[in-house]
Image (cartoon, rainbow, N blue to C red):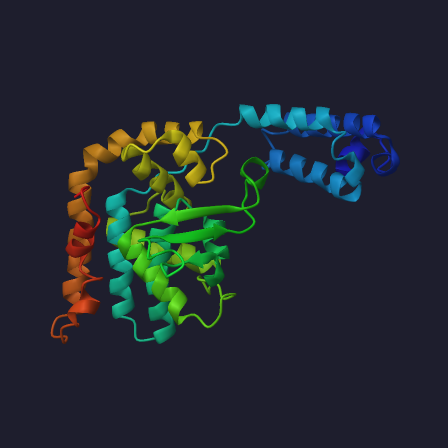
Length: 323
């Protein structure tokens, strides 16, 4: 913004002391100037937004007086090509859960072992609950309502979303219900071993979560992919939509301000998923079993109650009619 003021020979004090109409005109010119530089300057749209927000923070009373500026930014956004997240297929999710729990078994460090188990639970929670990565990282034990006497033993867990991204559209109080049995059991276990209700479910950094996600993906696919933690939300929406869930209900249950983009995402990629599902499933399970056999030759058998959560086929069967 300082460079813009020098280029246009405008005093920065006019932005700090001018009336709403004058500041709106200056900021609109600032956004248009960055728009003209978009081909040679990276992140021009982000810089424009941050510059306008900076002025709004300094002068809160201008918040509703910059209509032309925000209209210009919105028009710029509409010209941007949409960047749809690659939905994570259900078969890959199950294989990742199995792989993460197998990796926890071959880890000698107890802290890393527990982290892999928590990771395997949270990716399932993010998928079936259609959670954003930031919402997963911010979850605390107090945000999880587990089956108990107050819920009459309902076979589900309730997740409270604190500080939701789209609170302006859907309100400050939002929640998600997850009824997948394996995920409910493991999230309940995480809460039971936590010390207090303020403890975060994910005790490491977001970077570590992304690293573990990448490790699981690459060990299963044996190649690089475009999947990321954001693919959990897109994959969960695709999974629920394929289960004939109403789009309006899906929008509310996933905290989406717009259902159109998610449905288009589903329609554009679903055909490829269905076409490759059989071979993809075989590849993922084969890789998981090869790791399982290679790391447990000669080892003592697990107790059945513990082993059942790790066996890939049993986990697949527990998903129900899909298989």
